[in-house]
Image (tube, rainbow, N blue to C red; front, side, top):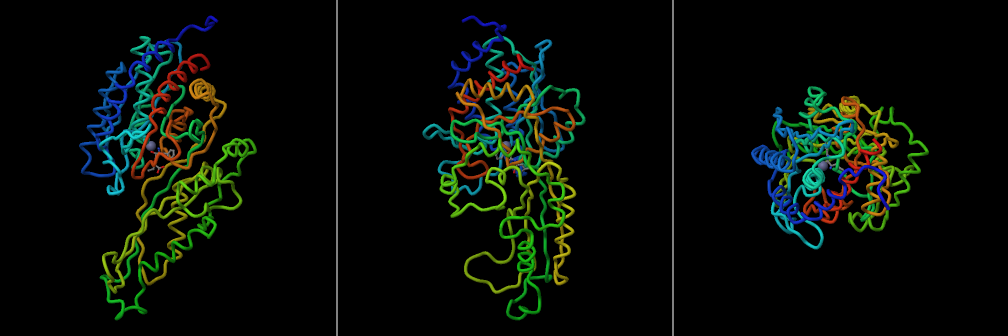
Length: 465
Ligand code: BES
Ligand code: ZN
């Protein structure tokens, strides 16, 4: 057999990747050792160090114009290679920041001392998202160092604030429309549907986050002397929380579902092709039963329906023994996961209005709205979707499933709106990588196969795009 199409260097790139697995792994370990926790001030220096480390790695890969763009928060790492005349441009996005690692006691090995057990590497951020960012750089390096060129133009935009809502990149994009212009964006910050079953995520949920403070008496009061006459802020808060959702998980905030569109037949069919093994889910999560809106399948509930969750609740005495008080304050941290057409600001306002109405006169309320992100849906018929699906087939021997992800990547909707680009979300995590949890891990075969998949994606897209 001879190749009809011009050789774009795929074979040389793959050969290069297969020659350097231990170098790539050593680099991954270095990157993971930097505790780039974006939500903690005391780690600001580490976050910066991770950005610098990445920039240097990108330079060594052969990327050009690599620089750190300062923001009001953490820098954005940019780099490009733009010498593929008449070929399309791919904009890679990812994040080098990580979630906090606590509870530290629950880690089998320390979160910033990567450890390999069986086929996985364990460290905070290995799957979300440093391992995946690095595999993108290694795919590009494989072309540049192995074949001397890339079949398409590439740009990298890697941020350090994704885990805190990405406020600064949201301002960066509209200021840099020309620099960031591209034909398609590629993000590896998601997971497979199952072990050895790649998934292209074509929809992400959006987010509205808010903190609620409830205050009662000026100071903690003796619950004997005052109980029954002074309202308890924790009780008041839990009454309010109980009215946010019904027992099946339907959100009770007036107007919450106003703009939620029913799923099309095409989507229902696509989503439900992803057969979820419920026993496995139960065993993995340890929850005695799965739960949620009865009128929707698990797949639909997981990505295509909006939700509300209390992420944390603080208040009163939680130390050893008992302390008989009416606490003076209570706090709750709430996030809502949204679907397209729901306006995050409007949803937030609806929640504020509803909670205000529910709160009794015996307590005072304070709202602290936090980050918002729009949901996104990407075009399933985009040529890059086909290029990605073909790459999955080439490397994993299986077509990908198509799913809507319940998590959020705030920038994807914004790239669609501001840059007019669709995004291919083909990540290489596994469903139970424990992202955001202790003992986060990344399946190393997916690291290496991910590199090769991205190599093939770029080659395929050069032909199809
Ligand atoms: N990588 C995740 C998004 C994700 C979660 C993809 C689960 C696939 C499965 C991302 O880094 C993340 O965690 N995003 C935050 C964004 C938030 C802080 C605005 C999220 O979804 O909580
Ligand atoms: Zn992530």
